[in-house]
Image (cartoon, rainbow, N blue to C red; front, side):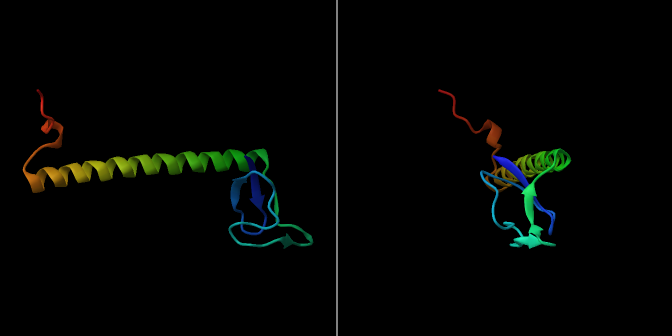
Amino acid sequence: MNCYFCDVCHYCFTAKMLPDRCPDCGKQRMHGHPAVRAATKAEITDYRRIQMELKKEELRTAGKEAADHESHFSLSHGTDLRQSHVRL
């Protein structure tokens, strides 16, 4: 996958091939030049940093939702999920 950048809306994204328009704003041209171009090293670094932050936030949110669900289940069913496994 290659990283591309839209000079119109500043959207940075990955794709297999250079698209003819921005997948975010739909623009094809800006000041007589293609709106989408290959991203610079700085833009790629920023893109990767943002993607890492988003992934961390997803994991944190998923962990909080799982803990909230476990707490709700425990309260509503009178059991602790961590101790609900049956040992034979």
